Image 1 (cartoon, rainbow, N blue to C red):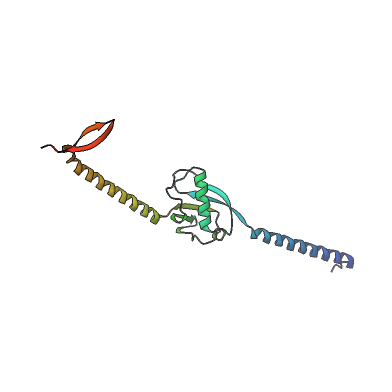
Image 2: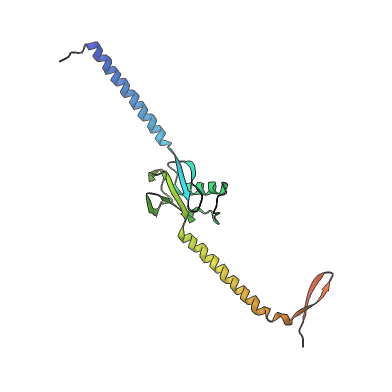
Length: 174
C-alpha cells in the first residue's frame, strides 16, 4: 500500500475538477454549435451533369431545400432545363431509402444524410404530358379543319389589291 501525501492528493483532486469543468464547458460549446448546425449537402439532379453543393441549416424543411436547389440550378444554367420551377413537382430522395421520397415538411437534418437525389414527380410529369397531348390533339383538329376547308377554298379567289393591301372580295365562278 502506497501512501500519498495530503498536499499532493489535494492537487490531483483540483486537477480533476478543473478538467471536469473544462470538459463541461466544451460540451456546452458543442451544444451551442449544434443549435445552429449547418450542413454541406450534395444534391444530384436526375439528368444533370453533376451534383449541386451548398450549405443549409439542419432545421430547414425539404421543401425549402428543393426551392434552393431549383434556384441554384437555374443560376448555373444547367441542362436539362425544367419547364416548371414549382417545388411541388419535384421530389427529394435519400440514397439510403430510394423507394420513398422525403416528406416536404420534414427537416433536412433529421434524415441523417448529406447526399440526396432530386427528380421530377412522375405524377406531375403525367399531368404535363396529358396537357401536351391535349394541345397536340387540338392542333391535329385544326390541321384537319384547314385541310378540309382548304379543298373548298380554291373556288374562292381574291380579286383585287389596293395600295399593296390585299382586299378580300371573293367571287364564286359560275
